[in-house]
Length: 38
Image (cartoon, rainbow, N blue to C red; front, side, top):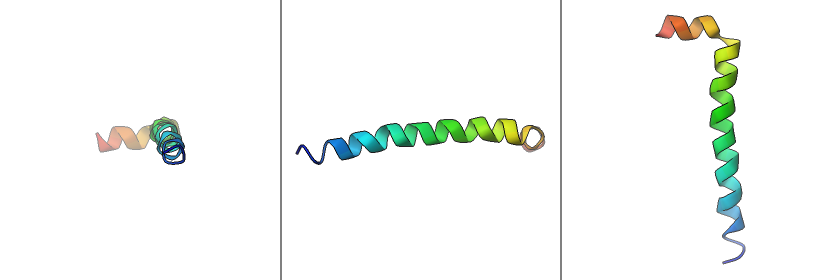
């Protein structure tokens, strides 16, 4: 139980940081592409 708990807890913060950094970089990298898609 101790080994199963640290695994899901580590994946939670890693997955939350990935999606947050992706939209941030996309907006700064392709600011014109976001307007064209909208």
